[in-house]
Amino acid sequence: MVMRAPFKRQRNQPTLWRISLKLATWNVNSLTVRLPHVLDWLTANQPDVLCLQETKQEDSKFPYAALQEAGFNAVHNGQKTYNGVAIISPHPLQDVHLDLPNFVDAQKRIIAATVLGVRVICAYVVNGQALDSEKYPYKLQWLEALHAWVTDELTQHEKLALLGDYNIAPDDRDCHDPVAWEGQVLVSPAERAAFERLLALGLHDSYRLFHEEAGQFSWWDYRMAAFRRNMGMRIDHILVSEALKPLCLDCVIDKAPRKLERPSDHTPVVLTLANA
Image (cartoon, rainbow, N blue to C red; front, side, top):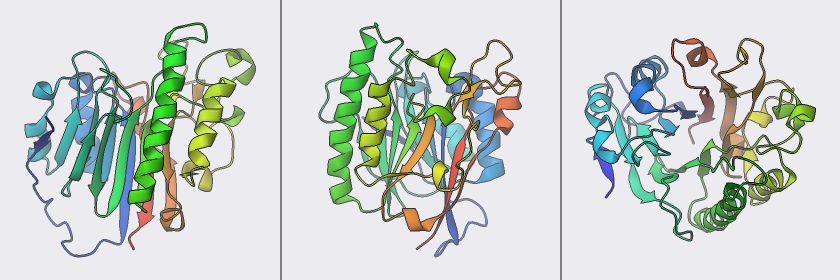
């Protein structure tokens, strides 16, 4: 069953027209631990959509009341201890869909909704663990199913955004040390090929529309002072359909939450779109 908080309009929010739309994705690595960070970030940034991954909560534990009090609607697809995805918005969330329809899987990794005419898909892609792990072929099969489903979604929704933790660094610019990571998950040729196949559907990596440089990351290990030393990976992405590409105004990685006490190992990626 889809669980949602009742819609509550933000104070001073325009009712008829908005100059721009702000879409964000954030792997929070336990919403139980990071809820204060999320509420503060929502208040400060006022996104139109925030997609969360790794909530690590059952639907019954999801903080609908706290989000409603802050003025946000929410839908959640969760499970105890692992995975879990959510979409949060001050706007109505319509046509909500859970899970990949073409892939039998107990893991809660997909939720989709239509917000202000944009089809928003929140995805938490399988990590894969290691190339010799049984979780690696599972990752590739899951990505194949995602590709097939998104193909179908694009036929129904011209304006589509696929946000989430992809657990894929698309090329060497997105890895702090490509040589050290060679032969590991997140950077393997098969994973990168799966990412390229998504782009071949007519999707665009919104961050790369504005930033071509290397060394820009969204995830840093907790160990070895990785954040301070910028030993990270860009594995959190917002892909947009051809219809949304000309509306993209900017895409940034917001590193501020990674500097907080007890942060997630990921930080938000935020896309601003012109409203049209």
